[in-house]
Image (cartoon, rainbow, N blue to C red; front, side):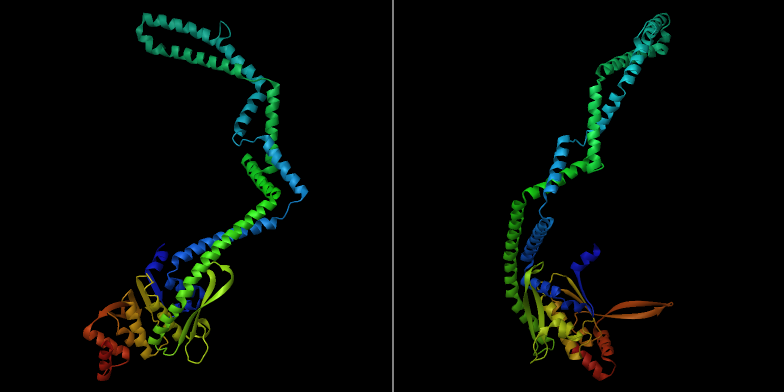
Amino acid sequence: MLKNLGEHLVDLHGPHDHQGLLSTDRQLSMLDAYAGAGDINNRYSRAWRVWREKTDALHDFQSTGLAGERELELLRHQLEEIDAAEVDTAEEAELEADYQRASNSSNLVELVGGAVGLLSGSDASLLDRLGQLQKLSRDLEKLDPALRETLEGVDKTVLELQEIEIGLVDYLEDLNTDPAELMRLEERINTLEMLKRKYGPTLQDVMTHREEVAERLDSVENHTERLAELEQDVAAALEMVDSLGMELSEQRRSAAPRLAKEIARHLKELGFKQAAFEVRLVAHATPEASGLERVEFEFGPNPGEPMKPLRQIASSGEISRVMLSVKSALAAQDATPLMVFDEIDANVGGEIARAVGEKMARLGERHQVVAITHFPQVAAVAAHHFVVSKEVEDGRTCSRLVAVEGEQRISELVRMLGGGGDQARAMAESLLG
């Protein structure tokens, strides 16, 4: 998360980071930023993804081909078989419980009948005996009220056993002992088990298979209509892509010469007095995710030579200056608050280094710019100058960052120039202006 956030807060350029400028994808994103094409670019990208999804769906449908008569017969049979069973994925547990009762109905009748008989079936039943105990308890309470607490459980016991008796009698009345019901339950269970064996280990899998079969059967039986529908969807999606793509292309065509002119102006200020620069658009055969065309930055550093793609001809020093020129041209569109240039002035001469420093200083008017450099010409144009030094303390190397101003800054520039003396000091003072 912090890494993604940092990409929007800090723009870091090292000695080799400018190689990314050679990527045509990066060049296209720079052109779009200069053109202010963010909104139309997003709308085009969404439309292109929809078109690709529609196209893939059409290809998948076409690849399935037309079904043979045997497959059609099988699909219809499977659909009819599942539909005829009227499967309810929630019925299985209740069905198993009903079957368990029905298959044990004779034993249940015998056992429940025996329980009811013990409770109330004769003069010697539990409830009859408890009735006698209940009468004795009341007589005892009359003679000694202190026994009331001891005997109060008798009435509760009688009441609970009476409720049990009523419940068992009701259960017997509701118990289905019809052999036909047992047969019906067996047939239903066998039907569901057969479907599970054929179409899935669970009833939910059976219903999922049913939906797949129905969808396949529909596509086969209505193949012509479905094919026409998919082709129409693809055509409509492509029409939207072409419309938005042409709108995006128009913005790019309008911005390309302006960007090229702006970059060329900055290149002249960085020592390329007669260099040529062009932003060329090359159309794709079919729409791509990035648009209807790709971009190619073309550079001609020497007069009289044909321009070629930047990636084919530029040296490291040239690429550094081109990158700085592009950054300068895009300064108004770049919302990154902090730019860090780590020795991007490598492979350039002293005179050009001064121009590089001034260019970074102008970028500093819109952004916070941090430049790491060994060139006094670059350091001298900075608003603030810091010196990084290393010292060994207690056997450990420590790095220090110290701000230098006034006389200290002049001394540091003299050091960077390669020595002392009045001439070096005068040069350092002249660099500071």
